[in-house]
Length: 127
Image 1 (tube, rainbow, N blue to C red):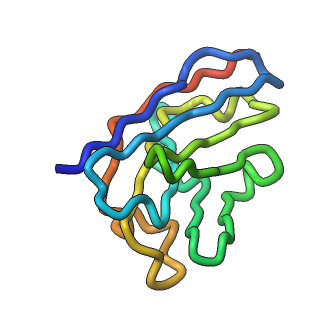
Image 2 (cartoon, rainbow, N blue to C red):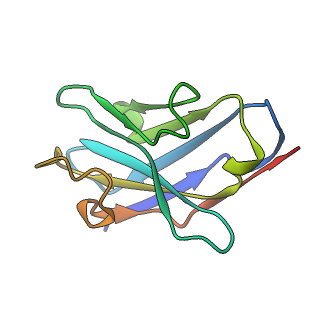
């Protein structure tokens, strides 16, 4: 049984940084692709960033390009979201999603492209 757990959320001032971690236990062959999504109060969940480790290309939402990065520690089955220069509009619940295979098409923004999801972690950025 696969379990995905996020950690690292919290309260930070605008301009600060946070690193979220997402650990997937029970994945026999590891994480091949992963994405982070977020949901702000009163809004729909939106795509933030994703990466497929076949070619190593990273996909970004325009709002986070240049500030957020996604990395992977394969030995720990863990994906990280490094968030720098945080803004109040980044306040949301952040969800990690992983899949034990590469993306089959440019469907990284599609929530249905991911097999396993975490429960979410709150990130609050104060102004």
